[in-house]
Length: 174
Ligand SMILES: CC(C)(COP(=O)(O)OP(=O)(O)OC[C@H]1O[C@@H](n2cnc3c(N)ncnc32)[C@H](O)[C@@H]1OP(=O)(O)O)[C@@H](O)C(=O)NCCC(=O)NCCS
Image: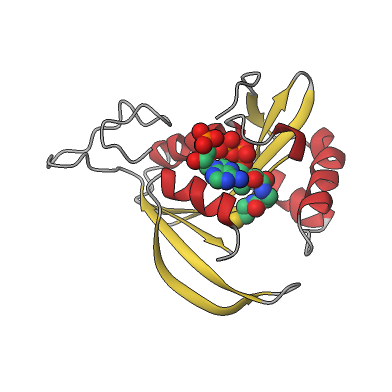
């Protein structure tokens, strides 16, 4: 990971919408429309944005279900990648899932998305099944990944959440 400014993480507001939509459109061939982010901001699990030097540099979207949380979207501005921003957003989301008493975190990823898969692997996500032709533009299968909110340190029967921060766990997963 290269050195970068520590991002400020905060809940997204309507004022962030133009920057979020701009990054979304620059990132994905099948971007979410503005209305999707408007709904997210009004939800019980609003997106979290990462702000570096006053500029919106990334966001993560989450959806709460019964005892589970889905990460539905994550993106980091190209100029700010490999600086730990997605890791910070994911760690914040895992902490949120813990506070909300979730047991599992799920997400979907394209098999071809090596950067995202490496990120999720580092956080202890494992592939649980494949959805055939899940993605469009371009068409591709989707991998569904899952992670228990409370990772058990290897060799221990008790969860240890104290160090649930990238690079600081005792289980060697991140
Ligand atoms: C995937 C994405 C969110 C990662 O954001 P990021 O801020 O660059 O990721 P981080 O800097 O926090 O990386 C944390 C770790 O993830 C892994 N990782 C991230 N990007 C990687 C890459 N391009 N290649 C290999 N590993 C990568 C590494 O283990 C990295 O740690 P390191 O830099 O110490 O090696 C970013 O590349 C992105 O926005 N991609 C386009 C949108 C997208 O694909 N979203 C996911 C949809 S499922």
